[in-house]
Image (tube, rainbow, N blue to C red; front, side, top):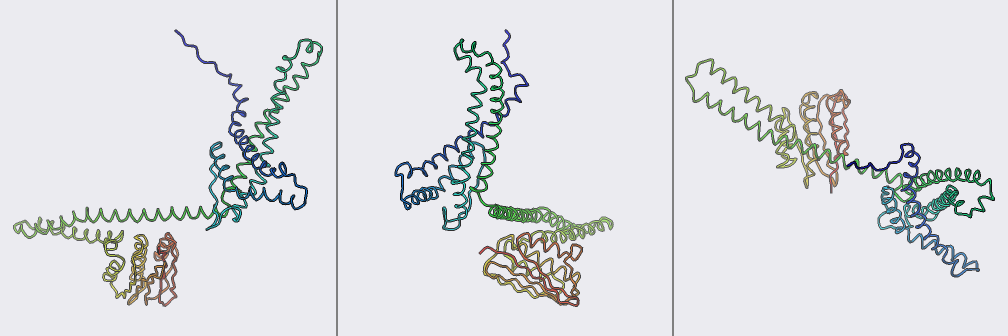
Length: 419
């Protein structure tokens, strides 16, 4: 048995019907908008429909009182409009900031919303009503043949030229229907843009929110990168480094417990033992460069004390912290001191250095100075201080350096800390 395929519209019909399919949601948006604005207009007309004031003071009261009621109902009306756009055209209008302890018409956001409910919204609703009227008239004109054939036969016979007139009316009605669909979409787009501008946050608020969002995302990226460095440090310390230590111990035991080995074999063992110890030293240095375990376990004071002890020149260290900053800030401060001392050793020709780390409220101050020849360069092709400045800037810190020719060089870094 052959099952007949369902009837489909010819392909040339679909482009003709597309404007009307695209106008479904805009038409629903306009219809609900007319309903909401009609309620507001009825509220404004209540004093004129019930009291009919004639005294000038009563007229002023009849004008101002409904406006005050609409202004007081602005938050509720705004919530209704947001839900209307979200449900019908999937446009999410974010809430505007009212300010601490301030709500309604007393804020800039409240005044913008009142302008929409009292001026922009009614104008768009009026345009929607006129567009709907145009669509109704156009529908009647497009179906004029139906209306004509509903009339008695004697009328059609007496009106010999009605066919030509009906054809013109049908064409005009179809054009009016297409115009209605286009106007509905245009009004919906205008209503959406106006609502986003007046019911949502202002341009300054959107920029401020964007800056806050980018700041939070950057902080998350910095925290994630620091957490990844700590993970790599743990994996190297607990994995590869321990294997190298075990191998070095075994090679050392082989040298002691196997005295009868040939000279060539003993030479190979000695060479392997030396290479293993050098690899352990290099891996230890790499681990400290990634994220030293002492920084996470004992804090900034102990980690910087280790740097000062390993430095090949005298380093006077002063750390005054009432409480530990966040792990990310600790890591940045550690690498600031480490990189700055590395530059002192490589380039400054100094006889000593001073490192001071202090906390003043929400600021962690790091100062590294030396008595070297000066002339430190912060440019990208300089001594690595440019990368250090970028690292400080990644957490919204400030980096400054004073290094005149002949010295001294003073690196000052301020890092934000949560109170």
